Image (tube, rainbow, N blue to C red; front, top):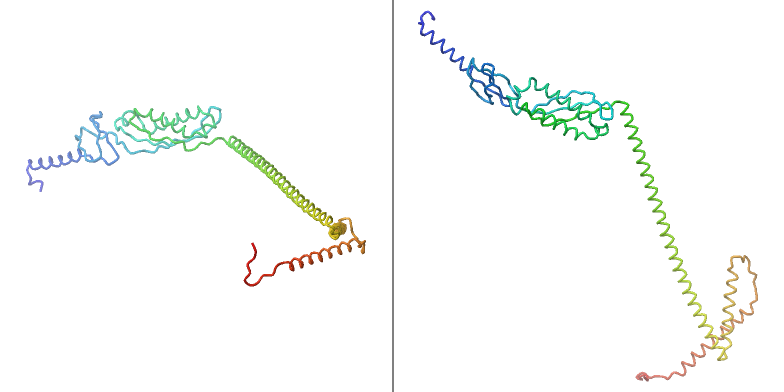
Length: 327
């Protein structure tokens, strides 16, 4: 078959194959999230973006394939001495993104190693300038300082550091024990303070309650005394009125009223004598002649009152069915 072809035909076939090979060698497909640098005879010329790109075969070649996506970089742990000479084990994590592929490819030899070494150094610097208590309580401040320093240092490399975070801070075991004892003592102190405050409030409330009870008791005694005085006043008024009525009756010649008054006082005195707490026995009959006389006086008073009522009824004018009372 090839023997039948002439020399020109073979030349055309070879030329076509070489052309196809050159075309495929000059076409580059860059994936999304990457940028490739192009070097011509070892020197950077331009950057290939994601998609199809053309280069000069055998003259241009792909230099570095740079990822433009955000990358996570683990910072290994290390022992750091704080400002107050305490040993702390610290590790971190960094997030960075390449924003300039040529600078990231040609400004630094090993980008990952450079960022790692820079972060390790600045972790020692930042933590070493702080006391142990500040290191354990101000992680946000440490992260902010690390981000500011590392981002500023990596900016000439075409890299943007988006975040630097301290993952773990581990003090020595003896410091952990001391911190645990300190925390326990602080909690016990707070508990004692709360207990003392509770006792103080309880004492204040008890004193306030006793004060209110004393005031209410005094007001009750005041009210009771006022009521007793009012009762005695009314009793005295009734006694005076009864005495005046008896005096009037005696002046009118009615001796039975005097017997009634004396008998009433006698009965009251005998009742008080019988109900006295130191009196266990009452001997009867006692002197009852005065009591009987008083009862007789009461009977005569009742008879006189009945006679007066009957005389009043008889002396009233009789009225017929159609009579009108005199006004």
